Length: 218
Image 1 (cartoon, rainbow, N blue to C red):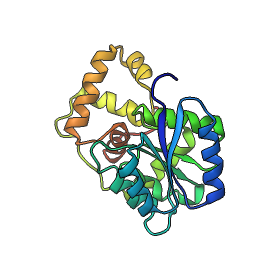
Image 2 (image 1 turned 180 degrees about the vertical axis):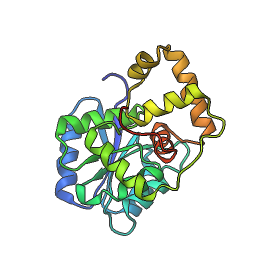
Image 3 (image 1 turned 30 degrees about the vertical axis):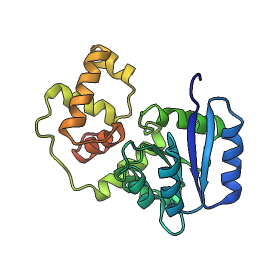
């Protein structure tokens, strides 16, 4: 990675875990830890003060939980990307975290290389929702809580793009599947973001699930 490092704010109430992640990120070229928060409210304050690229946010936080903190942090302009940390016993929070503006989430037992890759992915503005386990968690959560929505104004081609985004496909995979150019795909994604009032790709995934687009291949 070249140029300015990815600036990370760590938000976790467990000092030992936070220290481990800090050491990992600080020792890796292309990354910098700019601040650490032990509570949700502190995370909101530090995010405003330091304007990080990525906030690594624990869900279970004192004072203000990670979901509420994420909602406040992503309301800023410009807003940092938020990568939520979760565990299997927090599956029910996944949908709420994404609705609050998180760009994705990882499990707390993620390996160090994968965590670094996840931070890079989120920093680049991509949603981190593709791994099969996490996709199943999102699907189960949305089926329980989503009210359903229509796709008014979305063209048939845009619906195809949204379906593939919902399934966790990368841009390259969508281009190949639909036989379209990168520029055309970006136009379709931009149109979907506008029509569905979505902040980013993660919210397009939510819209796709809420509209009943199957997350599995047919």
